[in-house]
Image (tube, rainbow, N blue to C red):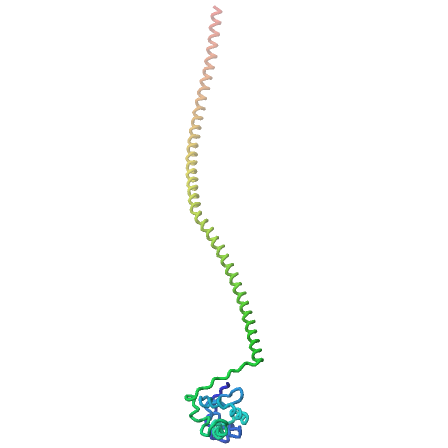
Amino acid sequence: MLSLSRVDVGHEGRTDHPDRRRGCGLDRPAVGDLPLRSLSKDGLVQRKSAGYDDAAQRHRPQQEYVSMVCPDPHGARTSDVRAWFRTRSATWPGRSKSSSPTDSKWSGSRRRRPKPRSRRPSSVAATWSVQSVATATEELSSSVNEISLQISGIQTATQESVNAIRDISATIERLSEVSSTIPAAVEEQGAATQEISRNVQQAAHGTQQISSNVTDVQRGAAETGSASLQVLSTAKMLATDSNRLKDEVGKFLRTVRAA
């Protein structure tokens, strides 16, 4: 249904207004004279009221006749259409003269609205619907495939991230182990340094002792040299005394022989 709203209100009484046209042999006022109208697919005039809709649904032949007489439903005034229905209601088959489509009997509160007719879609509409469903299915399938690819990529990236995190965790564990061994190595290095320092001190003390011993040896050597000189002088004196004694003994022997 194509709904029309009010436009150009207030020009109903003017005959020279450009919106007043000829339709079905009646002058058309401004569109504002019609409260709210809707145009159906078959070109019928229908008002947004329960009574008029009931009348239109219950008297389909008359509406078709109006459609044939008035091909442009917007060209007729609502009041003129009502008058046309009143003047011709007596000639409708199965209708009494006292009843009309605009009578209060046709109000929506007293009459039940007829059920809408079910229309089967044509083959073209069905084909278009099938094609639309097929296209939508293909688009959905491609979207699902694309989403699957994206999910696969996300899973691969997640797996790579997990592997990288595992490698980082292993590296951190190795660094922790090395860091735990560093204090022990520092302690061992400190102990070795202290031992080396103690050994150096002991070596220095031994060197001092050796130096003192060398001094003592030098002093002893000097004393030994002086003693050797004394022995040498004594030996020379003994040799001199021995030679004198030999001379005296030789003189004594010669004296004895001479006597």
